[in-house]
Structures are given as structure tokens and as C-alpha cells.
Amino acid sequence: MHMVIRVLVYEKDKKSAFSKATQTLDRLCGEDGQPFDYFTTFDDKTSTVSGEARWGKLPSVCKADSKEGKKLIEEGMEYTKNNFLESIKIARKVLKNKTDIEIFNDDIFDRDMIRYRFYCLGEYRGPSVWLYDNDGEGIRTPKHLKDILDKWECVYSKNKKPNPYKDLTLYVVPADVHY
Image 1 (cartoon, helix red, strand yellow):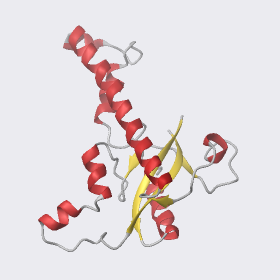
Image 2 (cartoon, rainbow, N blue to C red; image 1 turned 180 degrees about the horizontal axis):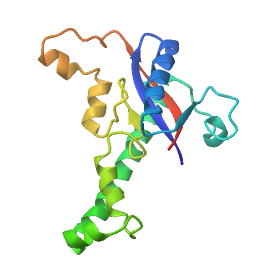
Image 3 (tube, rainbow, N blue to C red; image 1 turned 90 degrees about the vertical axis):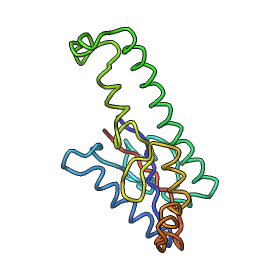
């Protein structure tokens, strides 16, 4: 399966942002059981099955506060939210209608895929999360996203420490990942 995730990174320019994002993507697609098998960025014109070949033209990197950056971020958060809402709806229904033992006894191919839905609800990285931060952590909540967009000002001002992101620009790097 393919999906387009977005990596949000703080850097001084687009080239550095793209480089940092690809390092993050390398970690998300590592050999040690990471959530994704491989990635293709949207500057890659060689792939016939992923990236632009699959999804059409997207920027390879853009400022988060640009029109295209805002759109990528909004879509990523919306996809994450919709996945969560679908999973929680099914989980609530199953929890209401089945006993704990019935849920325990359901096999992997049960109609509601309840264990998978629980997994999606608790997932921090992988197919349930469409946005990733500077460190490769999944952005799962509006508060996490706000903190990133605000360059973690809440943390640094509260602790009266200098903000290392203050003079950097927030960029968005979309990538087609396979899981």
C-alpha cells in the first residue's frame, strides 16, 4: 500500500530542509522494523510506480506557511483525524456489542478487524499517521501540530531557554511511502 506522508522540518533553506527530511524518511523506512518499506520523494522522475508517477505533481519541498505547504499540512492532519475517527467508531461499536472474551477470541480476519483498529488508535508512526515532525515522530493531535507550527515556543518560553528553532523556517517535504 502507498500513502503520501509529510515531514515537517526546521531549517535555514529548502535544500537543507529536503536533506533533513530525507534523513528522517530513511529512519522511518529502516531495516529494523520501521513502519514503512521505502519512500519516493516528489523530485524523483525515475520511478514509474511511486511519487509523482502515482500521485501527480506535488512540491518536493515548500515552506509550511505557503499556500501549498498549508494545504499539505491540512490534508495530512485531516487524513490522520479521519483514520482515528473511523477506528474509534468501530472500536466503540464492538466494545458495546461484544464481551471481552468474544473480542479476545476473534481471529485476525474478524469482520470489524478490532485488534487492528485498536492498533491504529495507539499508533505513533505508520499507516495511521500522515504527518511527521522534525524528529520523525508522528503528529497525531492538533496540539502537537500547533506546537510544531509555533516552533515549540510553549516549551522554551516556559523553561526560559533559548529556542533553537526561532530563526529557522518550517518546511514541508511530502513523500510517497509504501507499507
